[in-house]
Image (cartoon, rainbow, N blue to C red; front, side, top):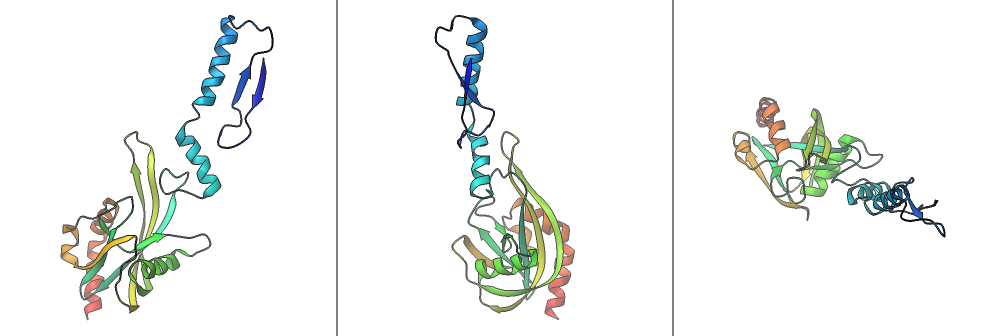
Length: 210
């Protein structure tokens, strides 16, 4: 039997081929028929998730179902014993509260990304004071596939100037007393982060008031 290779994207597997019947071939031969049908089914079943992975490779890494972890940076901004929280406008965690932050761009330092994202999201100019923690934020879908995987680096930051104003991808922003932060509908990852570093954040807030 003769094979014709599909070399053009989006038919993704380079080994996928469709078999064609030579003239006079006996299609009633069960072995020949089996491999003919199998080859065609492989071609038809190159599934959407596989195609999406190759689309990511051509157009850039996607946040959802990524092929590798994505790095993000966040800024803990304290003022008068309160923490600045933002309500997320996109997934994961749309409609829930976290801190200003976003993805690190190629060639950008992580701390610079935290500063840039803070300016873009809430209009504040900040400087980094210190690293607080780095952690994984992994979300699985119903089929236990990795839907989101972020490596998040959070910094304590100090305000230099500006006023709070929200960007289009942020639904809201507010100052919340430290002892009331956990009463908010926080994202799962930030709730775990805040619980782990609550005492440190509280001490930093107290120092800022002095």
